[in-house]
Length: 138
Image (tube, rainbow, N blue to C red; front, side):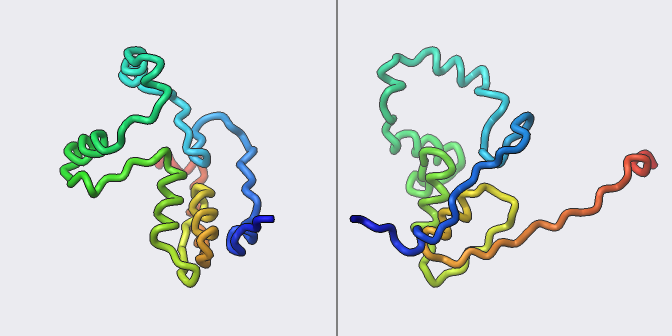
C-alpha cells in the first residue's frame, strides 16, 4: 500500500470556514460580484468546444508579459491561486526551511508550505482597538 510522505501525513485536516457566507468571502478567494459584463460577452462569443479544452499557455503568457512590460519567461499562468501557491512552495521550500505566514490568510499557504516539510511559523496580525462610534464624529 502506498503511504504519503511524513510531512503530508502530519498535515491537519483542512476545515473550510463555515461562518456567515454573505458579503465578501476572501477566505475562499471568491468573487461574489460575478464576472464583469465584458467577460460575459467574451464567453458568449466562444464555441462550446473552445470552453472544453485548455488554451495554449505560451501565447497568453506572451500577451500578459507584454501588457506588464515583462519578458514572456517571467510569466507563469496557473489554474487558480491554489496551484500558484503550491508551485511556489514546491519550487522554493526545503524540509529544513522556515515559512513565515501572516494569519489570518488563505489556508493553502499553510497547507502547501507544511506539505513540503518546511516548518510553518504563523504570525498573527495585530488588531487595533476599535474606536467607539460616538468618537468617530469628532
